[in-house]
Length: 261
Image 1 (cartoon, helix red, strand yellow):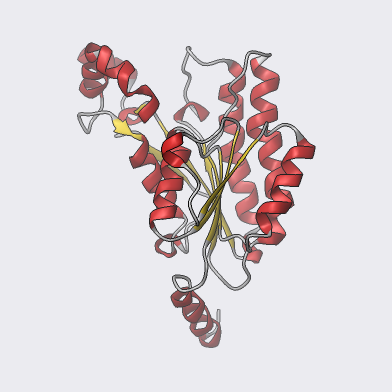
Image 2 (cartoon, rainbow, N blue to C red):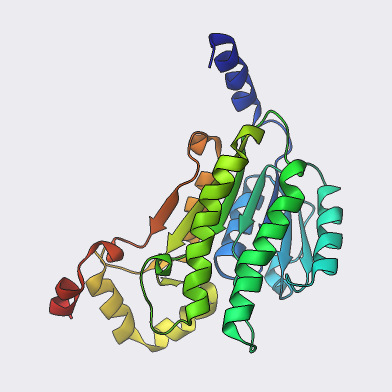
């Protein structure tokens, strides 16, 4: 990169915070996605949200947040919604925080929801990002992309591993368009919808805290904060990476964990 190109990039970098930032969150009505929406909105972004379930009453759409409710695997509905969303402005950030929640075959459901729908959305929207600005796509994966959790089906494991590879693939193919692509892999964490469950099972919370190097469970807000960081100029040279957010639990050998237990 020449001095002129570096100077030009610096100008665009500094202008990032001054132009309208349009962020789209897929799966933004619950869990980590909901926390991402809150953080984006608090930073003044224009936020578009697609969720399979309606938004909670506490998250009623404001001037800068608008919700679309649909099945991600319904291609007709999805493409119609994306057409309406891009009318709100060119995108700067695209976050995927959805997963399959259904009663049908978990293999077909996971792959259709987590992989096929994600691919279609990225390929439909890749030309709709702002020009000459720092743009970001973040895929929410899991540590089961490379570990095994026997309470989750095979499709969930394969889908999460696929998301990590998808992030790397698009990081390479979309880089020239100024789009960075990364993934975030959390472990077990507390979200608003699961708070009551963990309050009712203090022994389980204590066990997780005991085997986690940081000595506590994480929260949906902490996962969301890493995602929002990856969507900020502070991560402007980070692409194709998977950031594990698990308090260090996956660093330990199983025999060491067994001894702790």
